Structure formats: structure tokens, C-alpha cells
Image: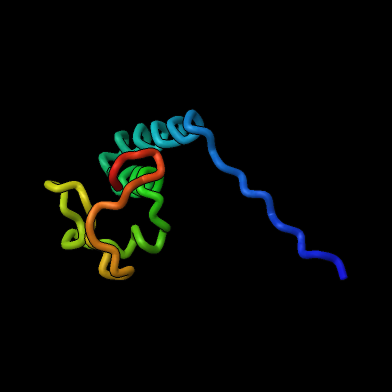
Length: 87
């Protein structure tokens, strides 16, 4: 029986991600609409999945202390990002 083929995962380099984010921010600046760039920045810097980010409300975010309270996943407080900074 043949083994199932695994799909290779393609990840962007830091430079590719920076280029993408700066392009999105530039386009959003032209429109005076920053929701899209905020979403992509959030996804790229926190490791959140799309559904987690879209389910967030302002009550879930503490900008003063720099953390989120994700009631959907029972995840409270700051999370340590693999790069060493809090997400």
C-alpha cells in the first residue's frame, strides 16, 4: 500500500514577510482603511490562527499590559512567542 504523500510546507522568510506587510500597509494607507494590515500584522506577529484573530473582540485585548484574553481557547495572559517576545 503506498504511503500518503505529505505536502511540503512553504514558509516566508523574514524579508518576504516584511515586504508583504509593508505592501499591505502602503495600500491600506492609500485607502485610509487599516483593518486588513492590522489583521495581517496580528497574524504574523502572534502566531494566531485566522479564526482566533477574527473572533477577537475589544474586550479580549489589553493594550496597556500587552496581552490578550482569548475566552474561545481559555488562554489568558501573555504568551511567549518563539522569538522571545510576548504575544
